[in-house]
Amino acid sequence: MTFPMRISTDLTPAALHGKLHRLFELSAAKIHSLDQTWSPEQGSPVFTVQGRYSSRGWTEWTQGFQFGAPILQFDATGEREFLEAGRARTVAYMAPHVSHTGVHDHGFNNLSTYGNLLRLMAEGRIEDNPWERRFYELAIKVSGAVQAARWSPTADGGGYIYSFNGPHSLFVDTIRSLRILAVAHRLGHVLMGENDRRISLLDRLMDHARATARYSVFYGEGRDAYDVRGRVAHEAIFNSNDGNFRCPNSQQGYSPFTTWTRGLAWAMLGFAEQLEFFATLDAPPAEFVEMMEKAARATCDFYIDNTAADGIPYWDTGAPGLAVLGNWRAQPADPFNPHEPVDSSAAAIAAQGLLRLGRYLGESRYTDAGLTVSSALFDDPYLSTSPLHQGLILHSVYHRPNGWDGGPGESSMWGDYHARELALYLLRLAEEKPYLKFWP
Image 1 (cartoon, rainbow, N blue to C red):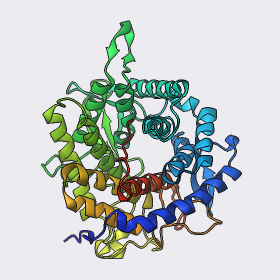
Image 2: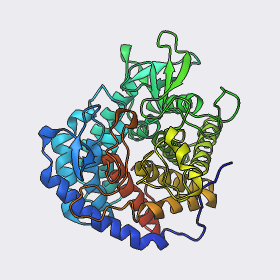
Image 3: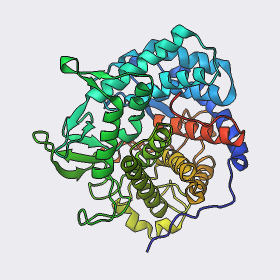
């Protein structure tokens, strides 16, 4: 028996206006604190240890969130100092991320920085300097092409952008990072291959989305003994010799046959955003849109049915310690329990996916669920109010199997960034400002 989250039906973006403003008031001090203590030699900040941001070498995927944060702060508040900080640090430090051939995270790093700046310029929020605009556009074009070049063909005629693990590995995370291809395509760019072959970034985006929907998401259709509708596998493994799918796997979740909730959240938001993007194209393929809708609905429904009552998820729905917690779905999440951690960063990502899907489909269940998660996340015990703590959203998890969860009360760079992005999304709705999109 499941206990679906208790979805509030009386919340609106306007009703959260006070929480949103409080979040950005706290956010300003957090950004200042990190800027004063961080030095480039330390590497990208990843998560907090005793309230101070530290680095963790694995892949360089969080620096765009570090410098994207002040850009979002400017977007929300209009405070020019944050725009100048985000812009200056993007120019000074983000170039290696544009041409980074070893990661699948281009949409995280480079749309959070160059992409946000280009979007603000297109919206008329900052002055339109032609050379500066072309600089941002060039960075996005190159980044999108480099991302698209990480390509493994599949036996069914499609393919996927492979993870940093190698050509055999499809990560569900990449469905959200995939948006760099969308913006680069929108800017008229292509990937040039051998013999001057022009490779469509939109085609690669669509093939990767198809592979993610087919191999990373389950639909309760008897695919295997653990085929539960909406369940997500963090990693799909392929035979790189012939492109055949071999098995699900998990790097950061408990097992290949349970659902790591941040991976679930990436799928929820990634599919929902791509549905919004494809709605702007002329005659997108009907089967492709239907496929993405099916994946978005399944993952969002699974989240609603497998999170705690307040909408904050534990780090993996199959984590063994949950058995000790009893009917954990029937109660608000307990970030201080001694058995399994919650993951507030998954909540920040998932809430935006629910909200975007609800708006796209015109279905209030998803919208109300997204607002319910947001209301819980932007309050105690998740909103970090201590001036001594550099994190914005508490109780985040990175890599639980590796022991990189930090314990209760710690924050992550991606959790803080996506909380700001979620708050900005809601603030624009509450104040009837232009709808927040990832493309300019």
